[in-house]
Length: 252
Image 1: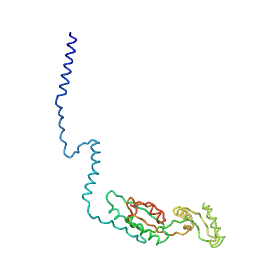
Image 2: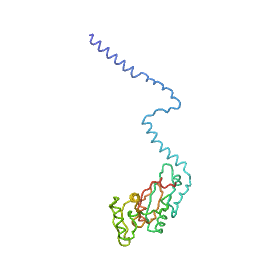
Image 3: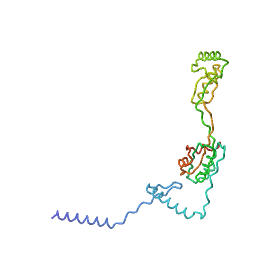
Image 4: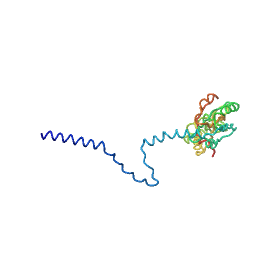
């Protein structure tokens, strides 16, 4: 009997607790403390992502509504200035829309000025600015030598002095440079100049000269928008394409 009464009491209590839990009023959240002035409110990552997703849609609607009915045409690319060695891209960089970074390339070399002019005219609708640049070709190398001596005996005497001073890389030339003394060939001008300085310090009037002709070739430097296809422009003009740092094209 007592066991039945205890079970019945537990059932009644559970029903009462369940009914109270169902009918109770929801708890009131404690009010947030006042935000100090000048301190931004903390946001969840989901809130930041949702705001970022809404921004482009809002910006696109505003831009479409504010667009001017008549857009001014883009300025034509400036024709290359012959003989201009330094390119000033200040105007092109300033004219670029916000967030658009221009790209710079060098096309060439061109066979003649007519080919350069044709390429410039073809590129004008595609680029912001274009400039001609004369680039000197590097020599094949450099040689160090002593000018021709009075005769073979004099050249032989100088060769013996060179050997005594520790310069073993030398020989006496013939032909149109008979009795001159070759003192070595170098791949760069700086190495040749260093060897000349060492020979002159030892009392020899050595000279450094480039090997082969040093000529100039015409190239075209262009400043264009980021979508410019430089490789296609190079194929159209049959020239090489070299990327450039636009900052290096500015004047001093």
